[in-house]
Length: 159
Image (cartoon, rainbow, N blue to C red):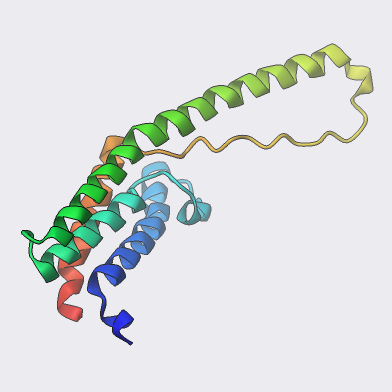
């Protein structure tokens, strides 16, 4: 039962959930497009990774103090996760996926044209595109981090 009293753990889990589900109404407001699948996808505004690690670090800071070794470890962990979300994941995932998807579409169009229109009567297998929304813009990471910090301070009195 002590697990239910672990404030840093619970505030991090709540921050992930909140950040994931708030993506849907934010996207709706920004683009007038309702995409409920965003709640279960990577990338987007705000970063749930950033929300989770900042909520965790803030929760540890509240409970153990900002001079504790545990807070230092969680803070460095948060910085690495947030840096990774904006840098490596974005470059390795999203931008390469965009380019590969463009190449695949161009190749598919080339092959289709080369076969000739007379053979187009049969079923064609749909080609699955690579996920382009893997990493985050720096602003998405910033607001994810801010979300985690705010949630930790708001939820602490409830524990």
